[in-house]
Image 1 (cartoon, rainbow over the protein chains, first blue to last red):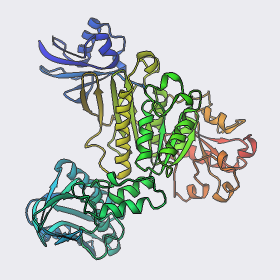
Image 2 (spheres, rainbow over the protein chains, first blue to last red; image 1 turned 120 degrees about the vertical axis):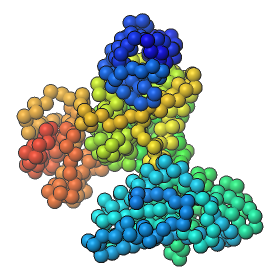
Image 3 (cartoon, rainbow over the protein chains, first blue to last red; image 1 turned 45 degrees about the horizontal axis):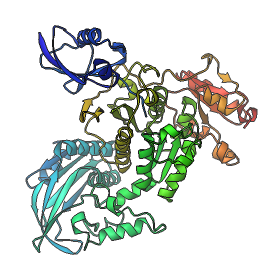
Image 4 (cartoon, rainbow over the protein chains, first blue to last red; image 1 turned 180 degrees about the horizontal axis):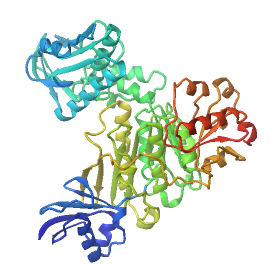
Length: 80
Length: 529
């Protein structure tokens, strides 16, 4: 199991009910991690509309997940 | 030898010269900046230079590369001292070798001027009377400063010496000779601005798309800073629910055009600013036409369709764009710069998000200071672009959470799968095989998502009503000489007087591989208005 820190923004934060959480996961990739938390929090946004960053850098969804990674899920926002 | 470097020891000009030697070169020009014994009438004893090395080296290397490309010289390099320097010591060295002398001189001059203006280097002067102060490193950019002095020539004052510094007073008087109201002295006092920077702002122009929660602070700060020309694009009217986060407007403005009401307030704020009003929604068909007349775009819109349209227009025209969006207590900020290595909005969001899937301010709610904070940062980025200062060390999406007070800068890279080309434009069904299209009005063509290009000669345009003109003008003669070109990514409607030249050009461009170039059938003679 890997221990990671997750951070949520915008509508994901609202749906998760928190802006940050630590969790232990068996997910191998970032896509797997999103599927896991999507099921748990009921996120409505599909993965294809989001971007993911690990340790302050954008990554592909197929990138492997490492222990102690800091993962940020970012939905696009448009308010002005 | 790197193109730009810092040195803590005496600059080795022999080594620098050897690194630029080339049998193909017939000319070698150098510039040396020396520590002088006085500044602003005060006797200087020694100097101390300090630089933000990581950023400064990158910007310095960019400047040298620009000079090589711009003047076609063979080799160029610049070395700047940091640390303590005594009188007479060399503070900066520039060397250029080229086939002929003219380019060598020009490139050398360009490098020293740009280094002075753009590279973050600070200088601390130690005076004979024991006092000291950090002062500007942007001196040579000011006209008249080059003659008679190798370096350190323009008098100016810093904040801690305003009482007896005369430079600031001169700069102020020079910038405000015609209007007593405008006083830019507090920003001219900044080393990175100075009198030369203020002139850049005055010569600058910005198109602001959206005059709402983000747009209001952007417009206020750009006008107040003395940006010479500002365009406002907004098709909405002021509503009562806007006022809590758009305090440029008052209750008396409710129901009025936002763009017009904002323009009126900006003219009060700074009568020197020229404000253009575009009281329409920005669409693919009109935005390229408008943005062509400005230095950069600031996107303050509240929907994805407009944001991507602004992105596409900036990419097509090769202009910078500053984007921001907010959601409740959060904001995102991103700058697009027209450089090979810089990501556009589509690089970051390959699947252009659809409006309605994530909430806007009306549905999700917003507190005024959130767009105000993001808008103020957009204004800051826009001013840096106009001033020619480094915008950021690397492209990034900055994500702000003003409830939790977190700020993350996520490094963004150019997406190799993104060709930066416009997609999802609001288009009617246009037959791509057609070469000629008929429209009753130019507005109808714009609404179909086409960018209008007037290819008539300047003397033909001179007779038009200026208000009805197509703003993007590329005369056919210039296009045929190769003096200017249409960027390939775009959907164009070529317009001439009667549709003959435009049809020929559209056919020619299609044969060159332009996928979406059309000719207005019958030309301007066939459309109303």
